[in-house]
Image (cartoon, rainbow, N blue to C red; front, top):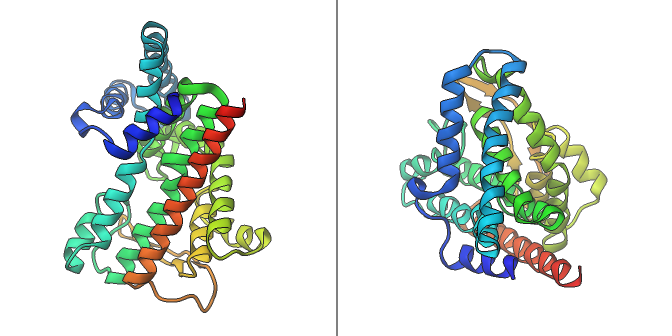
Length: 291
């Protein structure tokens, strides 16, 4: 029942506004801890991570014990970002001008959007969609199946801290090391499940071919759903991007003769991700019924 009701809430309601979302409260708490104890060392980052996650998880554990199934439904619902994922990506793809597309894209990616063409904005939006299909939906479902609502809530804390601290820049190279590593470990299996499902839904390719391209990605996990979507939708993702004024040279993902990402290709790629997530939800529901 917890899974079914949480998914219904996510489908019909989506996330509450940022000001009222518990993840936003968690983020403000993490920022406050960072302000108080920040030093550019791994040890300080580990201590900060333990403080933020430990105290926050104790709070959700208390809510779980106090309010039972009501708290469990809310925890799982708020750990999943299915609805908002498509809302943000759709804003990029539906934009009437390139400038509006770039403005919408800047809300969901860390790369520089200045100078992008329309196809560049579509490519970046679909890469974000592929990666977050794993991070925002399949990973929370995976950890829910293993450890219940508290497992999903713990994963959301880990993933949020990675989004805040897991950067390879001057400020977070050492302080964010723990946040990035724990997130990498928790996303290892979900990212590969996501890729496998995408290849079942769309055009397929051997796992060896997918892995060859995925391992060229800077992230040990994000490359798998991105490459899978490129093959599944027969589009070309990847390529060089600009971050913090520097060019990040990346190879292209997918077939060499893959089609350009026009409006039709972008729509079909979205449909592949939607179907992938529906299959993931159905499988999770089936597992909860059986076990």
